[in-house]
Amino acid sequence: MNRWIRLFALSLFAACAISLASAGALSTGERAKIHPDFLALIARTYPDVGGSGGSVSRLAKANALSAEEMYHAIVYTSDPGSVRAAGAAVNSVYPGFVTAQVTAAQVLALARLDVVRYIDRGAINYPSNDVSIPETARVLSREDF
Image (tube, rainbow, N blue to C red):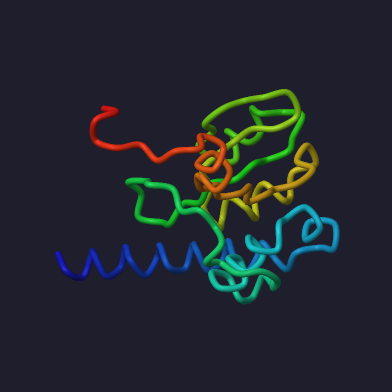
């Protein structure tokens, strides 16, 4: 039994290595479609493919149940079906873009599609009450609730 498991693991590793080798390096056009922080993720995950740029720490991780890390992305495209076909988990569809959860491999696959214009990391927004508190002119107390 252990022999079959090791053989399966070895064949799976070989298949992954072959698929990455056939993927090749990113072209200039494909690189231009990817946000620098996603390029940093690709450089960390697939060093042979190439990439560099921003920081992986600025990417918003998705709470996914998969074994691979998934990240939130905005994919600017005219064909949301192609994004789904590439394996990305599409959250919402708008005219001209979709929001999705993607892995590093899916970012590579999306960058190679002609219908994808850009893959953006979006922004992480936090509430900022620096304007509202002075505008209310008073601090709420326990009696106000």
